[in-house]
Length: 205
Image (cartoon, rainbow, N blue to C red; front, side, top):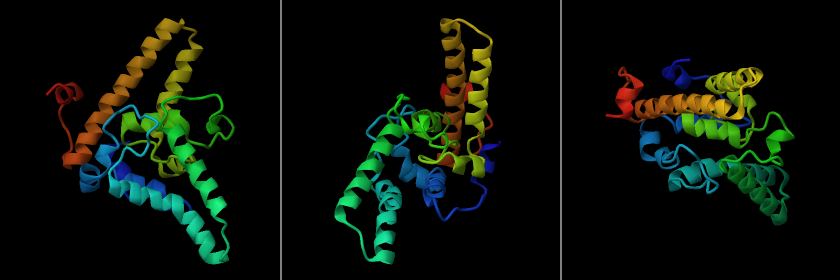
């Protein structure tokens, strides 16, 4: 999939507008002036709110909108419920940005949950895996293609029965390739200019 194909309108789900909002933050001025702070590091860390205040407000709306809408329609919402919801959302954000695939992480219980591995790839590849909760939105929007290709390559390498050291080297090469492509995609999003130079020329320029 070409980089510019990712940004073509692909439909919007009323259930999870955060995915479309996150995708919009990866284009043009929104990326350059707002979302770039969050992508300062290609490897995320648990302090997920390392972000521009406008981004915190934009994506935070998705977190608080559920309880607010529930309260609006039912006229009944206990503050303890809001605290529990906010705590769970914070744990989810920290888990997705932790960089660790813990055995107790939710993606091991719910296969459609994003988790750290899925979101780590987003921080490396830049234009893939926009969802932070439900993987199906990336599948529907076609924004997890590179991730699925990467996972398929890792699975194929495991079948070759190479030793641990060789496997680690091969996986590292794959990750470096993804990160190089992510650097190019980030520059394209920030400048609005399609890069025609080789990846190595851009990195070492």
